[in-house]
Amino acid sequence: MFLFKPNGINIEKIVISSFLAVSVIGVFMCCLRNTYQLKKLTKTDRRLFFLLMFWSIIVIARSFSLSVQDWVTNFGNVYMALAWFSPILIILGQKIENWKVIFYALFFMFKLMVISLFFLPFYIDVGKLKTEWSWLLRPLNFMLLIGIKRFRAIKRLIVYLTFIIYILIGVLTEQRLEFIYLAILIFLIFIDSLYQIKLKRKILKIIFFSAVTITITVFTYGYKNLNDILIQYIEYQDTRVFLYEELFEELNVNEKIIGRGSLGTYYSHFMEHTKYYTINILKYEWWGDSSTRITIEVGYLQMILKGGIILFFLTAYFMLKASYLGIFKSKSKFVKRLGVYIFILSVLSLISFRPAFTPTFILLWMAIGTVLNKHNRSLTDEEVENLIKIN
View 1 (cartoon, rainbow, N blue to C red):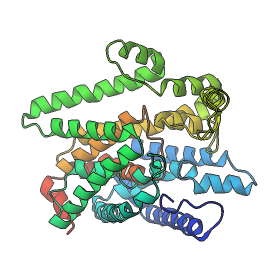
View 2 (view 1 turned 120 degrees about the vertical axis):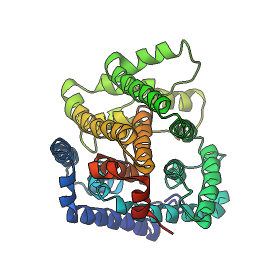
View 3 (view 1 turned 45 degrees about the horizontal axis):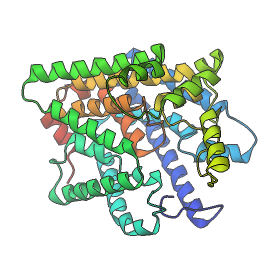
View 4 (view 1 turned 135 degrees about the vertical axis):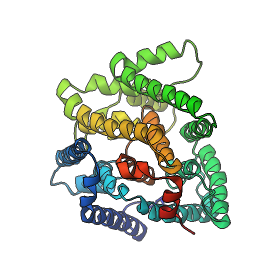
């Protein structure tokens, strides 16, 4: 899609949509054939996993209609139904050897993006590029986190080239998030690389529990109130306050608990006001979002809009528990870094990273599945290297 930009019905759109459908079916078949792997989870985690999947089905079923367009939107948009099926990848994450397949897939994506760079001059519009270009580049952060020394020289070269392209695309798409993501990643890698074990663990625990405290504060005391306090000490421009305010003001008590379903929408007064100002005052053509929005940029808010606090709590439980176990209760560097990856996405979900059936969240739920497995956490670096080593 990021290369062809198809409009209406054409061969490119049919091929791309068909590939997405085949990918989803393939993932589901693999997961269903390996459900026995769930026995390696604790009873509590198993029950909550089934509850999460059941609630995801409810979220999707609530948007059932006889409209063909609704079906296309729900199952052809990576932010809709497919996003809430992603947790099923916890099953594949149980077997640590499955990461070999993930590594092959990531290198394939990186090669694709290196080739796509030659098409870049044809798709730059007024200095800004579509954000879809970053979807296949974002897993670079994951590769940097788990370490690229385990790969041979040619694969390391591909990672280095991809890094350069990632920075370039981050500038052209004007996405500050990419640089925030990279900065947090580098900072946590530095902390995790400290030789003084006690100091490292102490710093990481402070960071982890501070993040949990901030998350709780955001959904109790309020994002705006917390932002007002922080802005007194740190000068920055926040673009998320209105999202929190608009959503919680529009949802009634029942909707806050169960959400509005996979195709649920909300009305944005901010977008309507901005549209009016752009068209009537500035006399410019409006290219922004519709006032009736079907997605919201903030990950946790997207969960609440679609599946309510129930979906939010179930998802947050797996993300926070897995990140803690990965960072503090694992022997191998690989599983520890999976915990760090989950933690980073847990933090960034306060400001961005709406759930989607994209590489970022496929990696997330695979990582959660791997970390929750006690056997995987008990493996040493040598044992992990033997299981997931690729040429």
